[in-house]
Image (cartoon, rainbow, N blue to C red; front, side):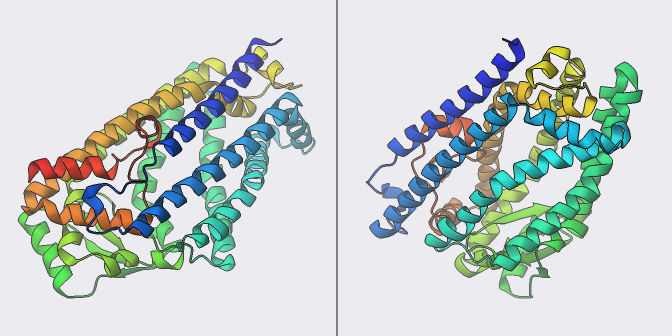
Length: 411
């Protein structure tokens, strides 16, 4: 049997089994006893609801993963990738045109497989626990907008990648790397201005005590903000969130409108201070540098596997092409991607602790951040006792209890 086929199927199956084991461990780690730290904000009913939410989500994820894994393996071994390729080649669009259409076809098939799960998760599970406010109109409008954005932004970058690998010889991966990095930087600046407003309404924060406290804190920390906004997150979900967007003097702080309803002013300032800590500690640039290096590594490894006959034989392909190589390489890259994501998550969790420390020190009151973390956990029904293995593999933020304990030590 073809080595690459054995390798790829093994990667898919091992990843699937790993997900099952980690999910079961995480369910087993759920404790019936409410941690003492949260006794001031949770009652027993709410705590049981948060555990039920974790159980339902986990079981649903296992079902979804089982079905999508089975479909992927069947599609692979039955020559599904080749059938799509033969269909595309009948249009005689040339290398780049065929590559774009092939990518679109495979992406569309993947989307259609995942769509029923997305609908069930949004309109059944999220609604069951009181989160969902998304209407069918908003749901499908979001899909259409995302599709149009994918075409508008994704087609040019894919065409450039195919062209570089097709005509730039051994340096094609370098040009792809440089082009992708430049494109990502441009998107970082365009997203807050052109892309995000397509999905949500951003309203300048009204004058009042909260705005004054935020501006006073930012001024004290010599931190320039171009604006403070609220976002209508409530039209899709009741969950709470806040984030920074933009760079330099274009930085903006955005609060979900749901957050303004449930979190006190001083606590919101502590959330802002945490996000500001990421900038002050240069976490944004460190993560971007790491991501750039990872992208370079990915393109270099991809260049080694382009037009590999054994790989195309594994996928039962009749024709060899650069565009199909992109998809096949993703299967080979998966194990390294998992390892790198573990490292990235570890770095991200360390950054969260640093940002918490910065917020506690600069506001002079760790309790405000602790209270905001508790309210976020309560409103989002967060799992308070995740299994360590789940944290290592999937958590970009430390478990909330670990963050609170670290802040308590500072206090």
